Image 1 (cartoon, protein in one colour):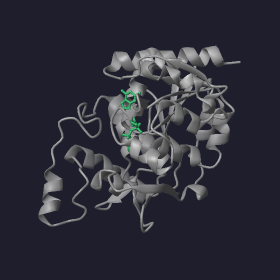
Image 2: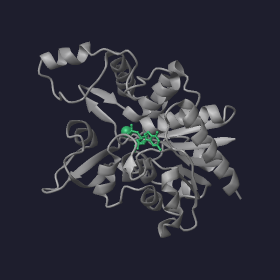
Image 3: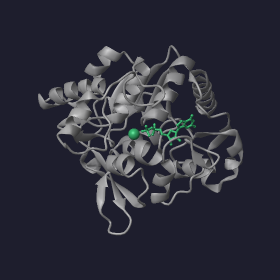
Image 4: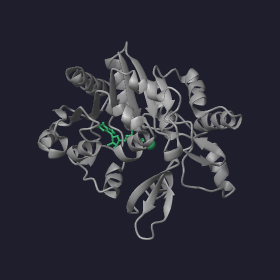
Length: 314
Ligand code: GDP
Ligand code: CA
């Protein structure tokens, strides 16, 4: 079975670990969001690709959900001693090695998709991990009031998404082309899965790459709600949804993806009423436990998504 997943960071990575356990023989391609990417201290940092790579490769800081296990911050504290800016982004020493290696390979002219494949040779994530595009794309946040735009990371990490936003600009996306293999992985998939990632700033930028949404719409697509009982499970997805005028509910997020894209939508048991939402007309809604409290729970969610996909496959 060929499965293609559009992935953000922590929510996607935990779901993918469950998917590998639920479908050990499947051929899984992961298309990762690069809208969160940023250059700091001269280093190109790809948070979502790295979260997937470290989680599936066994190198993640489990409690934090991102970054390397048992990491230290010697380099960061040395930078702080120089007063180097910015002071608000956390980077561990082990993690910095990844960014140094990636930045030097990119500097030598290697496209991000090849760099990612090279980094994955060490981590052996057990999936094919592709960036959505080799072209630089950056999610910027439009702040309420003066309409100033700032990089997504500055809003998320420095401002903790507390400054109201009125929208997002996915800078460069209209000129971006899907990375090699992206459209093929979607077209050749038996099923496309949307993990419980942030619909606005994780899955949204991937779908905004020209050609991707149309390819996805042609497939059997099952999504998993990142919203349970009217709140994100972790993080501040509610702030992103508010910025684009979508209520923080499983039904509204499903309706935001819409019946054109989604065939099936998994919601938590407390959100079972979502199937009556007019915005989900024509979408098969199923209610199952959606808390990824451990890898077994994540595997059960992935199984439910695959079962629903089988049921819906023509
Ligand atoms: P990020 O890039 O690291 O923010 O990660 P993602 O975009 O992949 O995932 C973030 C989303 O995962 C948030 O909106 C969370 O609500 C969702 N999430 C995290 N843990 C769980 C969980 O256990 N169950 C569900 N259903 N969603 C989760
Ligand atoms: Ca992210």
